[in-house]
Length: 103
Image (tube, rainbow, N blue to C red; front, side):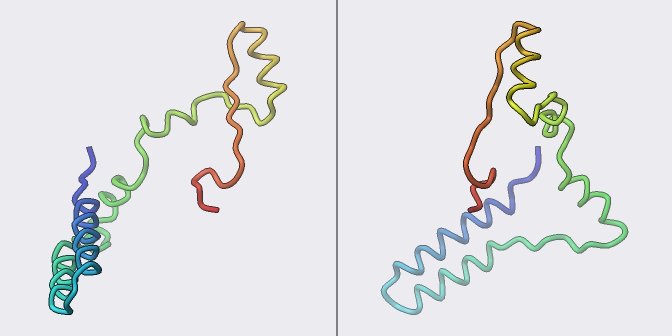
């Protein structure tokens, strides 16, 4: 399982910044910002020696890419014809907007 250190640090930083926003005085706000900065975990330097490890960490595993092995159809009718022949249901994925909700 991949490390969640960066996410934990981001969450701690966000909580610390949130506390700083709610603080009434400037010293508490500065302390919150300092806590968020201390929680930050620096990314490893990209060198020829670290490249392979970083690349392998970023690329999806075989299990994470299993959806690519499914015989997806770009049109509903082609899927309906094959599903009928195999006596199987059809999964229709329909949506409006960007698939990552980045509209």
